[in-house]
Image (tube, rainbow, N blue to C red; front, side, top):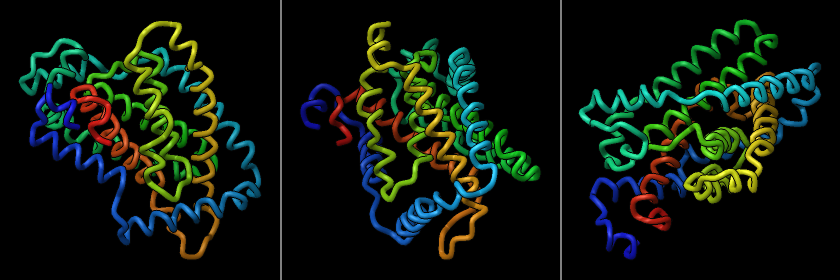
Length: 283
């Protein structure tokens, strides 16, 4: 930390943010974290039962198919860069592009994007309730819509921090966030120290077809979309399997989107701070 701070003195606001990231990466043991571990174990234990539900293979295949189509559409789309820049203008910042956003302070960015999580959590919860009325028949469109909402949430967080979602590596980074949150785990750190966090951060700062070909973005996106679709389908179907003492249910859309938004905020703010102070600043 001392080496990077000799060139860029760390503000008090950034110091608090860095500490918050460290705590998030290494959360203290509380009753809530203990409950999360129990829930995670329950998810792991119920997976075999889920696959015995009639029609589960058909459901998973159609969810995966829908997610692959969605990610292909996303490659032709971009999060609303113009709308984000307009939002900065409304808050008194005369930025004209993403590079200028990264010249702002973290405190200034936080003020502009405050409340972003509530928008997407609300969207996902309402969407889940609407498709939930259709029962099993509504599961495929529900999960595809859930991923779409969360991919846009992660992409909008990226844009607010000055990262370009038009770049394939950035779309891969955002999709990997969704995947890591969906995977069963006994340790919340598994979400924060996923391999993509160590590799995509570096790749996303580089340009050129050669770099993208080396990491096989297209193949990686397809693999992640398939893994994500299976994991979310298992979680959704697991709510139909009674497991004593497990925290199953509670609104998958709400819980999943809440975690994605929190994860996206911390990871993009960490990348922003690393760009300002050096890669080791939050270690």
